[in-house]
Length: 188
Image (cartoon, rainbow, N blue to C red; front, top):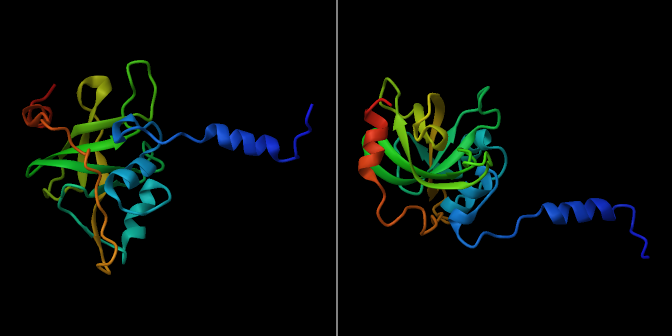
């Protein structure tokens, strides 16, 4: 029997924990940050809530959603690491669709799966996307929570040199605009 080096157990554990690349964007299972980075092309690392400050001076930021931009949820008690998601469609002034990972649970209770074209509704008083509600699989509609948002990070680099390119599979071919509007404006 071969003897393992002292740190070999740690190395083997890390290798086992490494997830093979997903066949497509929507096959991804994991945290929201690597998913948002892959889906948007925006090269920021670290906890989701830190993306807003990290983008300062590197990428353009703002308060209006654009396809391919990353929305940055603030750090809260319910979201201790924040959350990032990629805008896949702009439906109307206060409704967009997101593609993101690690939000809803699957029917079996598993977390981390990617979701495409889910409804995000601006519920801020000033219509400035500072507070939102997000579609949640568990209730088949907008969840009950309201989440504070820093804003949107756009794929345009401040230096103009390294613009991000969003993944081509951000949105489905025929997203359900009507469903998104119903989710946002019709109470469940």
